[in-house]
Length: 213
Length: 327
Picture (cartoon, each protein chain N blue to C red):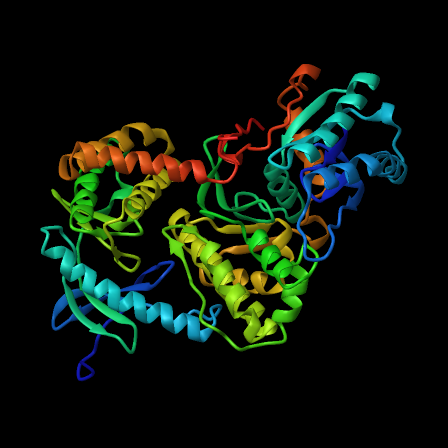
């Protein structure tokens, strides 16, 4: 791939990695590089970057087998902490209209339900990790994903999403949350849904200075 | 406008007077007495409240004297009504109620966490920052949206301040131990692997606490170094996530742990990467102090009247994200 010119264009400096638009064997591609973080101790930094690069590549491929839309993994370079991914056009759910976000939340719920049902927690369920392309919703960013069947872990995913709605989509939080739960319940079933929701409220009660005393 | 602010949520009993002219505030005096538990022990609520009660008259008169203000000249009194230790909170509330009823001065119960943020904003000039509040009682990432401070991430168990204090006490120091740990950490560069737990935008320190205790016998300096590197990197990552999600162009760090230089350095590097202006509350005012409470009292008085004496509550559990901001 060094034999021809590769155009790299930075499209996002994320928290965890820099995202570039590039090509992979002639196809439009996203290059995700987990760059060295100068503020982090080098040993710690290498450990985190290696773990997450490998984990992300593995999880994205595995999740596809459940019928969840994720970008294809084209290539992984473990030593450079790089992943080449399929370019998915569309809009981030975060940037959609309120009405649309409420609607899409049901689909987000279904996707998360499918992951949980298959024993995967995503670990970073935010509205900026979903891309809507006409009618198709794609889930991104599996760097914090984990294989787990625990109710607590699944509840953490839900709580994070609730926190995101509560902080970034305040005006529609109630509708969006119930739309999300209805989608989630359709996949995992009513009894599992209730268990996870009750665990979410347990986690919330653990929050510092929550109204429990 | 002159406001006396009274802080007594934990270690510190403090009185301060701020003069507000238009939008500007000037700290006329800020007097503190800090309760110090014996080495290796934490804060005992009863002992701390006794300390506050004994010291309150002296702190108050020193505060008035230094500011050159008579009680009768005060326009309002505010006190930290929570969150904090019940016995300690009550001392501050009693002082505030007494002054208010005897001299007929309007009284304002104030959220302690809000005090950290608002004074930090006033002193640094930050307008619309993403805020990191790191102290013994809080580890929270916040942004202001729709009349409330919204939580973008927080600790799922103990706070950063508690983590440092508990390790320090385990090693036999008197809390607060942050300064001691920072000093020891600066003497080592030997990183021992420790658990790094970031869950979405949240962090969890309890596992890190146990693991650090286990490596202390191998060398206290290396343990302190590894602890700081791991814990601060976790905070750093959570802050980066929140910055990239909110797209804020200002960042403000407040609270007792804000005084740590290594944490500050990490946060500055992050802000540089995200083209974000970095603000840190001045060391003198990053710990708990009356000025924080006084300033919020002044801000609130611009929009509402004081509360009736029977409504001067204290609340041990009082989350910042439930407070509606009117000003």
